[in-house]
Length: 97
Image (tube, rainbow, N blue to C red):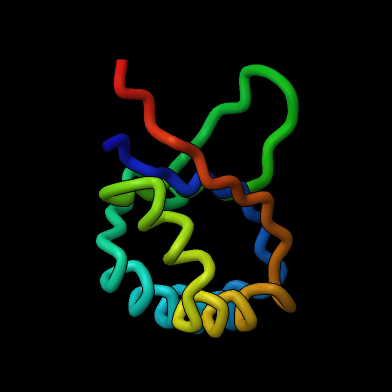
C-alpha cells in the first residue's frame, strides 16, 4: 500500500488568525497519522511561481490522506483557514518504485 501526501502552497493574509487553524488541524492530523515533512521552511523558487509557504504531509496511506481531508475535524480547521489565506492543496499517491 502506498503512502498518501498532502502538498500545499499557501499565502497567509493574517498570521495571528492562521495560528488558530494550525492549532485546530493538529487534531485531524494526529487522528489520521499525518507527519510533517515540510512545514513552511525557507524556499527558493527555481521555476514557475509559488506561494509564500509550502507544506508537505505524509500519511500512512492514500485513503488516510483523503479521509483526513474529508473529516469533520479537518473541515472545522479549514473553516478557520479559508478567510485568512489562499491555498492550493493536492492529495497525491506516493510512488512505490
